[in-house]
Image 1 (tube, one colour):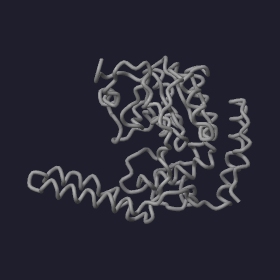
Image 2: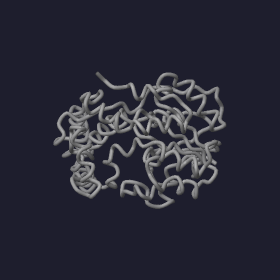
Image 3: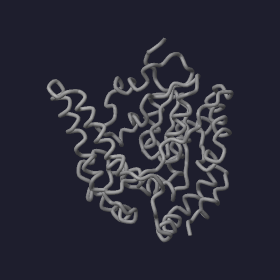
Image 4: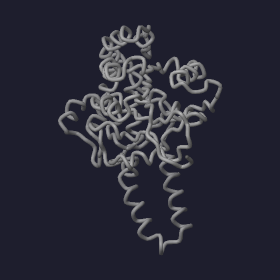
Amino acid sequence: MSDSICKPNFFIVGAPKSGTTSLHYYLSQHPDVHMSKNKEPCFLAPDFNSPFYPQTEEEYLLCFKGYSGQSRIGESTTSYLYSKKAAHAIHNYAPNAKIIAMLRNPVDLVISLHAQRLKEGSETLKRLENALEAEADRRQGRRIPIGFKYPNEYLLYREYGKYPEQLDRYFSVFGRENVLVIIFDDFKKDVEGEFVKICKFLDISTDFKPDFTIQNTTQTPRVIILHRIFKLVTPALVKIGQRFRSIIPSWFLKLLLQAYCSFREINMKTGKSFVCKETRNALASYYKKEIECLEKLLAKDLSSWRLNIKE
């Protein structure tokens, strides 16, 4: 069965910035698991379609090339949880699938997701306060960054943290017994224990211990306009390189690529974005009822989320 193609039978559906990249990496090391070679294929969220994602089932299944008989085949797409159509689409495609949802304090989620969009080059408003204020316009298709080729919903940060209604869709479609909810705080505090819980849920060996190195740490660009230029010109540079590679020495193209990547890296800084106390408190107030509803839904104390306001 070496190098064959298979369909997934479990999905990490989100939320973004909640440890999904790390979990994808940990599971990819497990001998009983075959993870998609690229994270975020987003094929089964028709309301989040973008030309950057697989457009046909054939393209989607290429993400799983290299399958060699593992019992669990998975992929991770963080917009599946937010999507209003993904739960039904996944069920139609893989009715017996297992679902893993990872949830983070929605205040921290919004802050980290905005930083991620800046890193991707898909956000032009450096201050989170301005991005939140722009959400009403962005719902109507206004104030969208030039060259943005994703649905406008990607820039509605506060919508991502509305967990109860998102989980309800999966509970209703798959049954609660087939949906595992992992709280980011627990995952961060006891990654080995939470990983064992996930392995039991997927019915795979709990004896394997992967490399638990954290993946996808927060980075933000120092100069937004430079980062946006990098984002917009990269496709053109790739096309130029492909077109003239027969007459331009390969060593020169490699040198240009290395210089370009180094310059991009210099423009990035690692660490959490600064957000003022007032903005944090406003977000905490916004999510107060959501968190209370989630506590009832999961029968879990999440009071630390309500108290987690930076002084």
